[in-house]
Length: 425
Image (cartoon, rainbow, N blue to C red; front, side, top):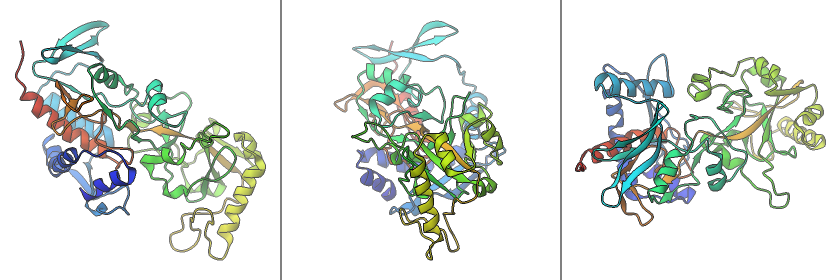
């Protein structure tokens, strides 16, 4: 509780203390509940805090299923087992909800859906629970609520903001619209989802803006809030000079392995069947990675001033070759037992074009600790509930995996409270 409260304090985002209590209480039961989804399930548990320097970080843990398949697909396997096998609940696929059905007397009474090309009005017996995810693939909503352009996505292309539109029509109050889990990533031609840029084992690279200048300690950009390092808007030139930005490597970096190793999970890998190679050669051949024999020629390929990029790389190399081996701009260390920096000296040289790429959005309908959707005056909208990243508990400083836990906790709460509602005729 201390750790999560501090994330809200540092980000100046609105925190609902009752939601925090419900979330923390739910965390104490989540691992046991996950185990109940399958017989003989095996969980891995480890300590994990995205911001280890924040007070209370030592209390945070990560839990997930062991198995040949990991991440999202493995979690979905457990959900499907619980729904379809253990309980024999019918699931309608390819049946998107379009609008909520409401009456002045009963509030939300059902939903209009589209199934097999036909519109159907589906009556709810006790309540409607919205679990549609966010708006990562809805450009209009992103443009209106978030800074940074262009902004692509890593996650499910089904997250197109439908739930946000439905609850808005029902009169929901909105919150946390600036909240994003948005790593940096790479657009892959011919594919819908992007590739995350998370070169954990690489130390010989820098990020530069469109003028060829570094702008951050590249190794201290927390993965889930990568967008905060690039959504700076230049008021004089009227542009985002870091969108896109460029990751610069040399041949030594290429020999170390993948410039952008693939997630263990994600839409690009598991649905579009695309993985970044260890050699980087297919990505070079496809033009995803630009290469040139010199820094000056590489600068021309990515359209940044050659003299600036050359000066940036020279300063980087000079700093790392100095007696202390420290990068004078942002403090990366090129010497000692655990260096996190290495010179860019051995040609050819390589560049990746980097964008903000949404993993999930947090904004949407405000809700209470019972998972009831609230209107703009913080009053419950009758028979309407929400769970997951739509109207998330989290603000824009996001603890990795926090939305998965949130979906479990508030999905459970929403189901229990909706089931207590009195059916209407």
